[in-house]
Amino acid sequence: MTAGQMKKISARVRRRRRLRRLLLAVLLLLAVFLLADRNVKPLVFSLAEARSAAMASRVLSGAMAEALGDGVGYDELMNVRMDEKGQVALLSANTVRMNLLADRAGEAALRRLENMSSERVSVPLGAALGLTLLAGSGPLIPVSIVPVGSIGTNFVTEFEACGINQTRHKVYLQLTASIRIVIPTGAKTTQVTANMLVAESIIVGAVPEGFVGYDLTEEELNLVP
Image (cartoon, rainbow, N blue to C red; front, side, top):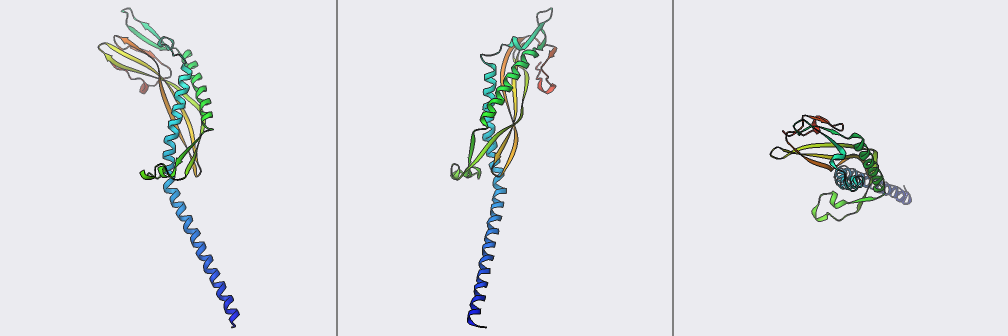
């Protein structure tokens, strides 16, 4: 074998070694990336979900405030029937007025959420890693917020003892929205709920024996004797 052939063989061997080293380095980097993505993604989603939920909650609260305008009177939402002794015997919901208020709040919430979807939330990688010293540092991970489906509306009522022979009746408007949180490596859907006190009144005497509500379940009725 000549010296020239030996050099060619040595060159091929060196190239093969470099290719193997390069391939090993690529595989190692890929393994590190997949491991980091698996460990960091839940942290990123958790932080992004907290920030997105806070933004969406503010949007829902703003929509309810917009729908309420200058306020709603208790008598506009609840019909009170007295007995022969002058005590409250029956409370019934004004479903027509409640439906109008709920529709207005739902439309405002959907419009505001669609406007919010054009905004971008950024999560610093250092904060996602949970490192105090790096909380505000590192590359920013973009987060998109997309509303999903329609807005759920409901009224929740609560009876609360507030003194001797007195009960405070509260009526809350509740909005529920589904939002999709999108980061470069995945997406997640979560629900956000916001409540706002709409009206309240003091009932003097025993809690009424009858109550006709706005699609309220037993769990949503907190009757205090």
